Amino acid sequence: MAKFIDLTKEQIDELAFTEKELEELERARNMSITFEEDCPETTPEKAVKFRRVNPPR
Image (cartoon, rainbow, N blue to C red; front, side, top):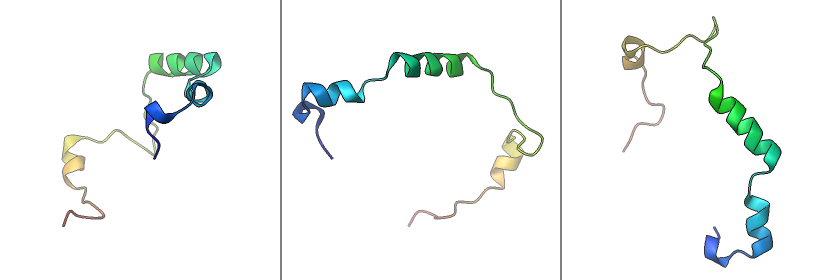
């Protein structure tokens, strides 16, 4: 993993979002969350029933 301070100016510019990506992120930020029939919102009662697949050791 590289440190940010070790990157060249060109590498830093490549990491920046394009104008199109920024517009897409803004549009997504303004959209509301929609739950589908086959994927309903998880309620606190349903969340209690979930178990971790890989429990902490």
